[in-house]
Length: 151
Image (cartoon, rainbow, N blue to C red; front, top):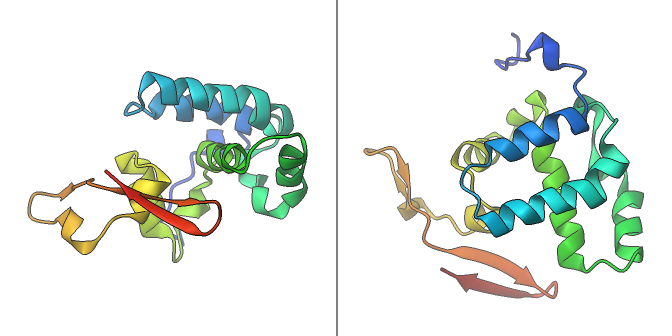
């Protein structure tokens, strides 16, 4: 109540393994290929490591060893970033909607945007009168130095 967020008492101890399928089912805007990719990342990389961990205690940034393990197993940088993104998305904690990143978390979760689409948003993309966000572009970093803009 103090932070203005609601935490369902039945979900406080829910594990990543319990929440991930619900999260994936809620991603109604995904193309079949993206849905299959997310499901594969969950099955092969996220759930074996994080499935039994309560989502409220799941902080992948505190466990850089996991990302290093994925990278060391031969996964490309893009695949490691995808695994991190899927874990972060599937285990968003109620407290993650507070603080300086609140707007980004809300736009990502309620609008179903990809990170690259969020990163490309500009003021002109918001139609406040019609309560719309116009998604026209995406921006991605390639090879750690080149920024690529696309539609």
